Length: 281
Image (cartoon, rainbow, N blue to C red; front, side, top):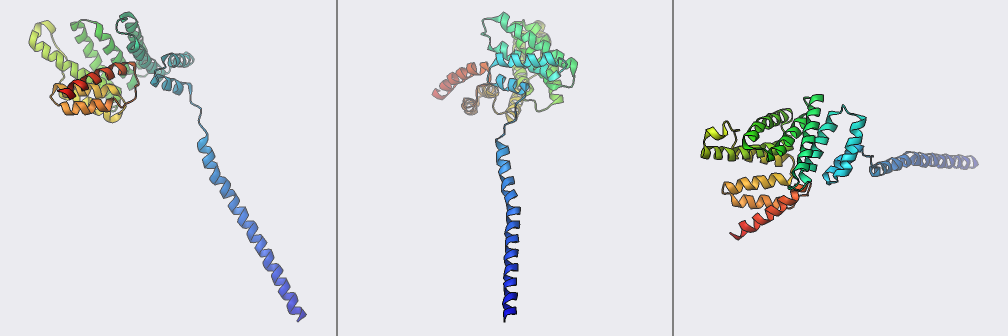
């Protein structure tokens, strides 16, 4: 009987020992899991430090042009052979030029000339950098506002060539598509004017029509739906073609978009005036 009791006691101790081992193993395997599951949450809160170029990009989109200029310029001094920095400087100077009041033509043209210089430098460093071609076309287009009709037509050839190159390198370049839409829209108006005054006065004019312009603007919107300019320009085409209802929808949509450029403020005022006129007709 005593022997049976001893055997039972031994079994109980053995079972208790197994239980302690089991509980220890359970803690051993579950504790790290709790720690690991906590780590992803902690890691998600860690914010990666932005590079100076990323900070400059963000400053540009918030129209803090002095900050963007300072950061881009510093990076470019440290790395003058960087093609991307050169086209970003071209983009900045186009934005700076547009921010200058229209009455100050000299200051505006200074920035547009600087933009063209940076864009050409980008292309010389890397001819396959599509953004260099895009912003060269943009700067040339801005400079064309203050030149005569014949000179503007000569400039149009170079602008179209640069846009074609940019879109061949990147068919989804929203900026190039937007400018292409404007090119076709302006070409359509010049074509109408040419028919009125005759070929002798203007000579060869760029080819374009409102259908091509509309297609370019719609594609630009599909790739970046934030840009106010594209809605405004497309709305104007819709008005010219008699599609008042869509023009109203486009402009109302544009008014909900963020202001990313100084010229957006002017476009917003123009669209509000147009909406008031169209909705009262």
